[in-house]
View 1: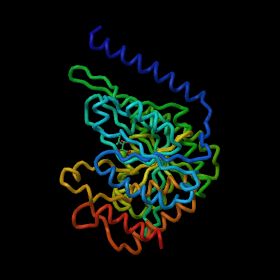
View 2: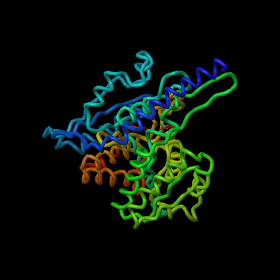
View 3: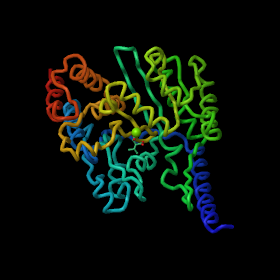
Length: 379
Ligand code: IPM
Ligand code: MG
């Protein structure tokens, strides 16, 4: 055999064995309840680029809204340092071990965007954390109130193109990546989507794939979603392909009929940026990464390196991370605080809009938006 092929086959064999073991583990592991003690520990991670600036504003809001719990010792905001691109590159670890230890000691996380080096061996910190903490459901709500659009995306967050994303095969003149879909991994994201639909009185769940082309992986994803859907007879499960669904989202004639979406990882990544843009920009949407033991809340967007290069970091929009903070509050059972933050954001971003962050010097700074929000929260 050609030695290149031999090496590739060996590499593939190791990947297969590892993934079979992972799939078996997923089948065996019962859903574990969160290990919350009396105190809810909220880890706060600034991240890279515009991350520290936007996270600082979300932290102010959380400190204010959780002031009583923090004083009573039932909640703690804990700064976690070291998840910066400089430290990660210096250590040669996507998430340095001691940072991961600090993270594991928290119940929930509020995380700023982290830089992902293009190419090279360094894995994305996001992907590493999602995998290490098994945060399998990426939940991304998008609303356009004036149009009756109220979408919730359930993006599978640990499988698909991301499982082995940095471990493809490169031969002379040819490269291959792998996409992995397991029964157990699909079942749990499908359940999360249908449970959400049931609890929130939604009538439809759109299962979005490209199963006409990705026959094995997306074919399985669709089939398992329908198996799960059988347990929710009151909810209609519809099959859509990702290409036409991308068109549907920009079609005002039909987009408001969609409610809940469940989809494999990469399609979910792409279409949620599109959806966030329709809502007002990727700077406006929050994102929850949910597992059975831990959850991580973050902005939907990245570190905005161009804004930093152009010296516009102070003008970054904190709305997205504030929406993430709102989801975090709801997740830890502080519904009242979550609603207060939602109402204040509505006043600041929609109804009163005394100032607006535009992402450049024509608009307000991130900090002055934070001041405005704090003023509205205190009303
Ligand atoms: C997201 C981001 C990440 C992803 C990147 C930063 C790895 O785009 O959270 O959508 O691709 O999932
Ligand atoms: Mg993305």
